Length: 284
Length: 196
Image 1 (cartoon, rainbow over the protein chains, first blue to last red):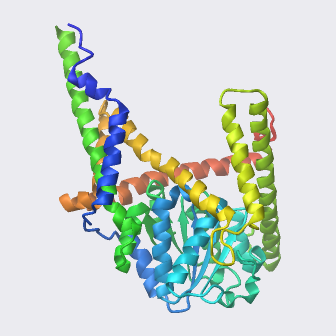
Image 2: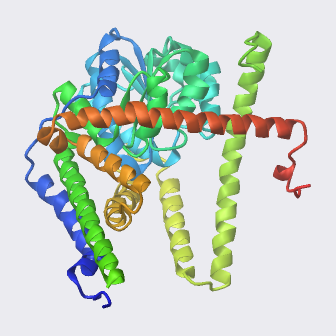
Image 3: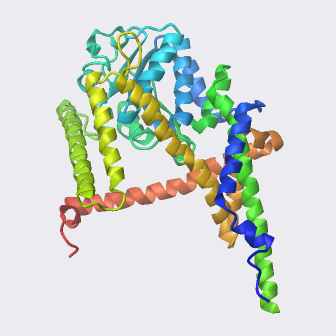
């Protein structure tokens, strides 16, 4: 007896993918519209970044390299907001920059917006250096001579005239740097060409898909902490006690993960049944 | 060499070399742009399938360049309002790239449903690890089963890290071997030569 192509099992195994798309869309939209604010557990790697920021004194130099493009905005942008809020709250000197040309507009927007919210002044409390081509060469060059690499900030002011850059001549003068990355160039380049040579503390933030690849650096102490994906951003928001877009998105992420888990389990149940049916047919 | 010999002379050489690399990086952008234009001009001239997309690329490029020139490369004007360039970036490029990336969630779910089948013991192991990770990395998972977060963390810290390290060491050794072959002229493929 031949297996029926119209059986429920074969139908479920070859289900039209548009049904799956609808399920994912609903799992994303419903929690976003009706959040239940599930409790978020803080991971050690995110706490490490937070604790290090907390340990820095007022006036410490904090460099935030926003090495991500608009595609990674939903995950990494909330990380940038949280880190900038924390740095401004602690009255640190903040230097913003990017190694990704398509991220320049976003990086400028986030630093200017958060600074305005926190009452910080460009040139005195923070600066945005913008983008330079060369990726790893830019990091190397900043380690040798920061003013040589970025003679002017993003708005055309010579960086020698900026109060915030008064005692910052090379990367050796940076107390803490964090690279928020979504690929190349990113945390790996900041470690290899920056921290390893110029001896400053380095932390990282990345998309969730990149985060597992950075755990060897984390475990080896090459980066002191890691904010991974939207979950990491939500944890940081919780540590700052400031609810933002990341915390709002966690319910949606929870729901989509569970929809995928249920789909995968269902698919395997149907697959196991189909295999058993095939064996039965072969025997008969 | 400079890494191991931090002498002022080698420091000066590194400064000069890294500045040159930035300048070359700038020219590489021009090269990339010329190459892109050539490729898509060719597609339009030959009327290959999907040539219209190349036209869209030129139109988008033209709009961005003109908007950028008119705005002087600035996203915001003196009154902190979005310039044409800033508007195109914020309301066209950012949402378009975001949309492309967010489509992944749908395709990943569909692919997971079709491909994540326990056909072999190894596939079953991968399947269990994936479910544990998806379960333990979201608040709902930890809420339903508090220990799941620790399991996910252990997978990341121990299994994932050790395997990644092994891969990294292997790749690094391969790169060192290849570099030595290039330095001594044994490997010449990068010059466009054929394998001897």
